[in-house]
Image (cartoon, rainbow, N blue to C red; front, side):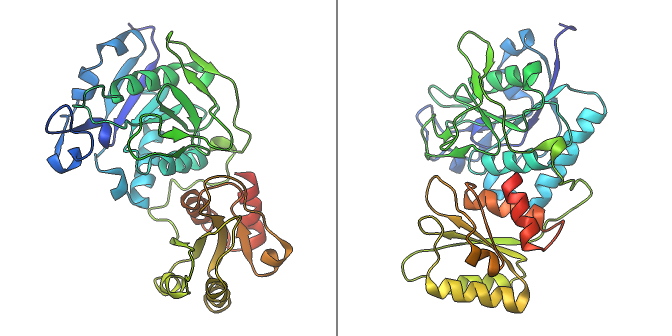
Length: 334
């Protein structure tokens, strides 16, 4: 119907359009090497015609664990092109769940629009018994079409639940309830009666209020992650610095504690090559804080961002400055 909102659908791939060898192939479907054809996912959802005018927009499909920074930047430009041409009032992006939360946070930080952008995936392939992707897409379109979704940043819709792209993370390898916001909870729900219900607004800055405009870039500064464990030495830190990393995120123990050998290697990389260090934690939830000693050594602290999201924010921050104090302000802001 012409009075319905226009929603663009960008299909990037992942479990949601994968096809297994049979309906109980819930684990090894990637090895089958089959995908739904272009337009087939949309064609399987005639229910959408009563929710929005949905048009599939061209973009390449690939496994989410194969994405590179340049893919993010091209996706960002594609989204803006759709909005600039007034082809849609909201966009839904299907995405593999392996790195879905990273793409969502990237868009949350870099989009220059208040229009809804919703990332959606599935935990079961399209061919599975009780495949979850079809309803996830319907709910994502509902969210993208809802005027109340404007101005809330990049959103993730999974399992009837609406999450902020900043806070959401994948907590299970196969369960349909895998996505959660462990510290902060969801923003709302795409509920069983067809309504989109919000209970919260994101408090951290995003999208049009973000200082990161990277649409003109074709690459981002290299930032690596080094995980800490009993007996970890400085080899991985030295290797990252030698490979050209401009920053390193320490996925440290507890509330952010690398080993003594890692500490020495971090200080050497900072002193000799100016590699900026961000202290995060391998723990599932909670903040990492910047002590006076860390500030003196040029470290920044990740707040409650997981190491892979801290890597992303640090990379974007390094497009603006290499001043540790200024970058800490960004971590406290976003």
